[in-house]
Image 1 (cartoon, protein in one colour):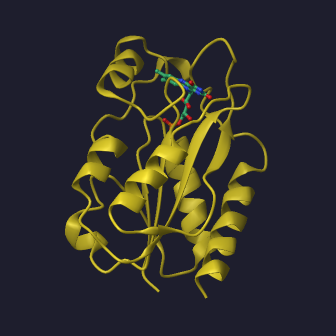
Image 2 (image 1 turned 45 degrees about the horizontal axis):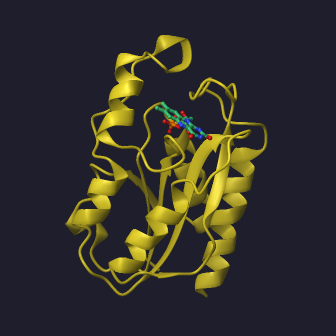
Length: 173
Ligand SMILES: Cc1cc2nc3c(=O)[nH]c(=O)nc-3n(C[C@H](O)[C@H](O)[C@H](O)COP(=O)(O)O)c2cc1C
């Protein structure tokens, strides 16, 4: 099975979850940023799992990425990594395929809303990848009134991501 986990991640939390999901999926699964997940890398994928941080209750946009940059919202004022494309841009360029799909997002626990994962899943579906699981949220540390991450994932989230990866692998059997 060719499984690829694709992520957008400004401060590394979504990337860490993506790598844990890939571990759970098995030794052949790879976690790639939206820059690394080229058409060649995605060709003939049996399963695409894609994830992004929740920004303003949805997927990051040019505007929210600019807020993140200009507002020094990262842990300790760390600059965000904006070197890879937005997940929404990546989804727009995804070539049609016939595999399966799943989607996740990372968010501050106290915040709710439709989130980014359901939007990602819609995009994957549009490209022909049929969902095999409900959208899943993973939680980062932060303050509910300050829309940023404190640079850490909540306890147990890496393990939860690994387990979800293993569940997805079983669903593919
Ligand atoms: C501009 C901006 C808006 C955000 N809006 C939300 C939000 O609406 N709900 C939420 O739970 N988290 C929100 N967050 C927190 C992000 O979800 C958190 O920074 C992200 O999960 C960290 O992932 P990353 O390290 O992969 O970038 C926001 C963060 C930023 C920078």
